[in-house]
Amino acid sequence: MFADLHLHTLYSDGTYSPEELVAAAQQLQFQTLAVTDHDTVEGCAPTAEICARLGIEFITGTELTAEFNGQEVHILAYFLDITNPKLLQALARFQIVRQNRIREMVARLNRLSIPLDAELVFALANCRSPGRPHVGRALVQAGYCADLDEAFERFLKKHRPAWVPKFKISALDSIELIHGAGGLAIMAHPGLNHYDDAIPELVEAGMDGLECFHTKHSPEACEHYLRLARDHRLLVTGGSDCHGWSKGRPTIGSVRLAPEYVERLKARSRDIKAKANGPLCPGETLLCSPSRRS
Ligand code: AMP
Ligand code: FE
Ligand code: FE
Ligand code: ZN
Image (cartoon, rainbow, N blue to C red; front, side, top):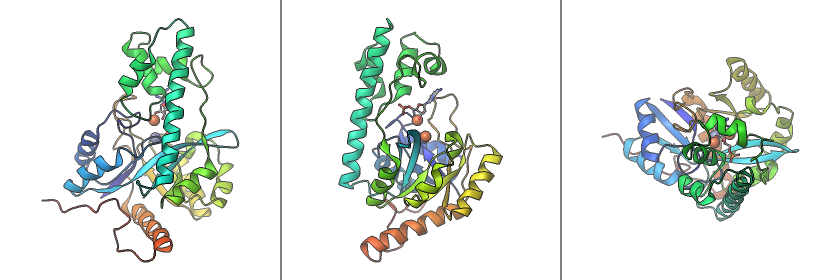
């Protein structure tokens, strides 16, 4: 009865379609899934539909690229109303920024005598929220790099020649945006950001939780963030951050979040929605309730 609350699909930089993602999750006997594609919620409805057919619980989500005092932080959102107009407007803006950034990265590659075509990257990405991994895959496909790691190391990593800084929403605004769409705001993979100093101020601003369990967190990092979550009375989440086959083998299965954490998230989400709209039926916070397994 475990959960994976950090999953990417081909609606951002993952390689799994919703069908492939749910099939992988089903094989590992996950009971609850959340799709958290970068700056988009487009993968939620198709994944929710498949989950509903199979009796798997689905939670809507996204992973916003934000910044706090000049440093990048990723903010996960859960239980979002994915029809919220302000949320959709903001996501559309982030996606345009991402698309313009791809053009700029390709222009820089062109100046390095790599004649990559931006349209080729967009065709390969085939989504509204393209990112550096798509440029990397295009470089590999065209034979300029042996693999994605080489593409990042030579060109795409921060301060490498084709890297382009990206406008990011402020972390404080991202929390407001998420709460406005009825969601919970969680700091993603804090152990990768090395930015614990940001946590008290973000908690002050209403951040709801920490992703304590993550594929790349050591057992010590997990313990550390569980302690911080307890000290700040924060919710605890976890997930594999699986991108399908994008970075080697799929990582789904590497994190199995215990059901009590999901129950606490659901309870908080219900409280928030009850306060905003008056009493709701249990289960109404989900995009769709799971149907029974046949
Ligand atoms: P972007 O949002 O366009 O800045 O791209 C960031 C994404 O690139 C991350 O979410 C990762 O999925 C991916 N990424 C970062 N570093 C690497 C790397 N060294 N190799 C492969 N993928 C990477
Ligand atoms: Fe990613
Ligand atoms: Fe992230
Ligand atoms: Zn992620």
